[in-house]
Length: 423
Image 1 (cartoon, rainbow, N blue to C red):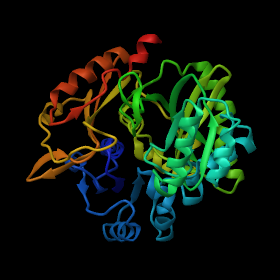
Image 2 (image 1 turned 60 degrees about the horizontal axis):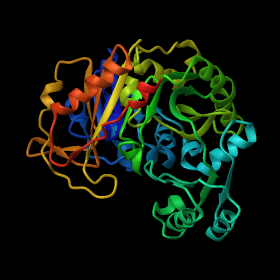
Image 3 (image 1 turned 135 degrees about the vertical axis):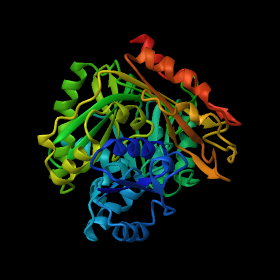
Image 4 (image 1 turned 90 degrees about the vertical axis):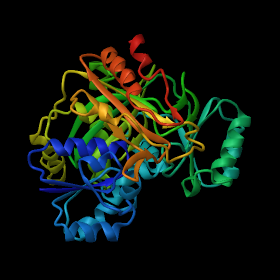
């Protein structure tokens, strides 16, 4: 079969690598892709939001299955467009992708169906938001309602910070139209855990847990980013936590979406906070996490195509999703200055060191080809992932592998997975 992957980051590279393992797949295309994805798929110069061109391409090439990796096209309704054209595509329809597309919607959904989350209020008017801060408890969390590349969340330690945050989100539009509405919620403390899941509208199959590191600097300092590294599984996601989440969060979310007439088929990413009062939902995403996909998918035992098609066809109950009994750690190599400003176009050297190794992966996030050579083309450039018998071994291997590649302005955190030592 022929498969089209929509997206251009490390997540899409990880998806492509998993798809390539399937004996059912003869040809992989990726739009628009990147230099790394281009080694295993044919990259097509069509942007992820160019729905008409993507549909036309899928028809022309007789694509059997399209997998959408990115949030923007899913929230924009790409699945609806493909289905209207009689094409098979994996991901939630527009009315279900709102689970990620609107934080206000997802918070209201959790309140209505009794899914544990932080206390909150939604605001359309910055004046009302500022008035609310007069009686709020600090620290407090401000969230732009819409998509903001994982950066639309501000943690404010006092009223002055919060006032500035409301102004930057709602008045100065720091995150564009994503800040037309805003959620203000209580600040929760505890361990963060990410849990990805496959969903077919009724049935949910949980993937292995992971933990992301959002802040740009060591010790969780600096600005929020799209993610500077991750590990899987999380030692803090215990069998007891899993049992609680299955009963009170996971299936209840799937059932709530169906009850609202928003049947969800695709991947639900549960961002959880393990608080003293039990696990609570921090956020939902409507697709594979990035960089979480880079540590979860390499550990998947199943043929990804089989699972994806079961989600589309509503037969997920017949599949047991299994993972290797090992661990994975991903360290993101970024361009110095990310996420604010950074230079591009530097040659990436040493990629050949990953060839022929099945326990080391170099996922390209922001790369391009220039004069036939791979160069940096984004804030997050590469995701260096290694698997090992346990988390400590995988972490050791991943950091060793970060030295195999080089480019000017290379930057990374040095404490990805440090929490493993505390488990």
